[in-house]
Image (cartoon, rainbow over all chains, first blue to last red; front, side):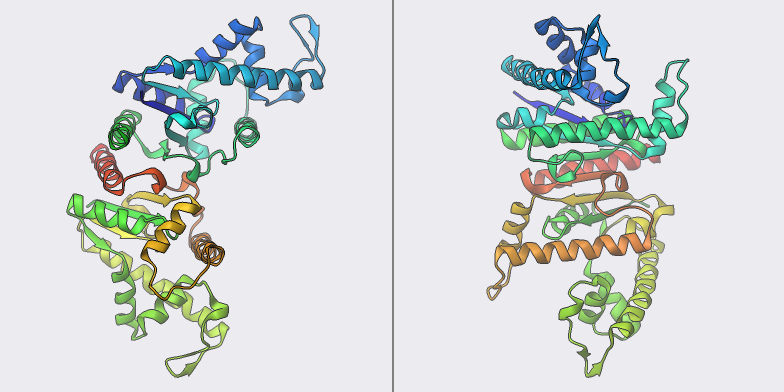
Length: 206
Length: 206
């Protein structure tokens, strides 16, 4: 079984790249499916699960959610429960024994013993702004400065979670087999190169 | 003309990887040739040129070199002269108009306008120690701790030079098209993947 994990900076196009690689290789693809599974298993709202796991913007998060008042301490406890559930869901995906691409959620660290091929995806700030703008809702009102702040907050939260769960540093090249900067690439060309590189790596380990 | 630049952590195998990629693609390869050219142009000793440019271990560097006493201030001035000469040598290589791989020396930043494919090569500390040990002279007496300190000093000097010469950060994934961690790779397989990836990138830009 070949597993490719994709960690990424917010706005870098890691999700698109991962999906393209999965399609090229005919692998299963897991992204928001992980959140849906946790929500289903726990009976919690998927948005609540995602926001709590992502742990960014807590200060802006409504203390009343689904009609219930939640303290920060409650949310922190809930977050640890959800991280445990997330780990189980990711282990469950691996237990299916099928080749797959898993986006984010520290799957590379969780599935370390199964030797996944780990990819990190980054991009220059300008490229990330452009990408976010192209994908924003029509009512999106963030200035560039606010958008950059949001991107940094999300990335910091991802780094904190990785730090909490694993020994290795988020975004540091030594933590992954391959790191790509999508900024100066045609995404189709890059996906083909990454798919081929991952296949070469799997073949050499077989 | 296709140019591949290879920046690397000390001990990561970036030089070997660059040479293999050059051989696979039939590109010219430049590494110590750059130092030799500067030494030839300036009439200075090649070891002096390399040590001054690399700017690490100044405290251990003999103040008397080639029979002449050099002050730190003199060496600093000399270093700037040598960086200018190095830039000219690298521009001269590019002016030959032939496909090539250039190791280190911030060639990616110097030749930015020619759009080189930029690679950064890193590895885990353990893998780098192993690699250094395998290549060390028989009389090498450094402990692991001393070796790690030396590696860090050299990398810090590389980072400082890049910071001084360019706006982009050494070793940060956003500064390069592709970053590879050699630790968990067979070097031949990795070289093939990198060569193919660079070729795909060049084709997409043509």
